[in-house]
Image (cartoon, rainbow, N blue to C red; front, side, top):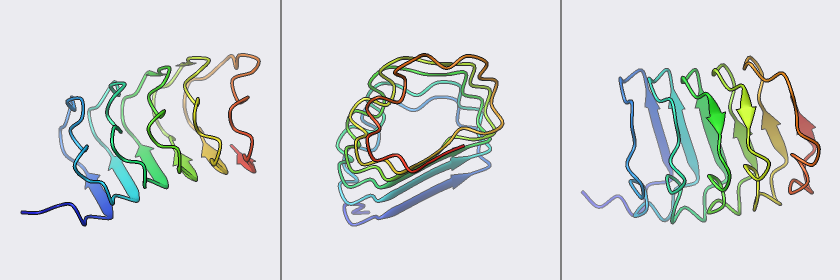
Length: 130
């Protein structure tokens, strides 16, 4: 199957615990990436490598504990990022580095207690934060 033209990836209710680096690198036209109700606890730093056209990421009801530096560095056209209903208690200072086009960020229903100063410094077009 040639997936080069795939624009929307929607994965819900599986038992995926780990995704290899560059697993989606060939999906060069992917615009929307949704993972919901999974067992995933960590995103590798190269999970979004090659996905320059990605404009929306939905990571909902996973078991993510932390957002790491540079995880989203390859998603420069990201406009919308939903990361709600996880277990996130920590976000690295440069987790959102490279996301200058991001307008909407939802981090609701996580376990975030402290927000580092300058955490959102790279989000120069952010219009909605929840």
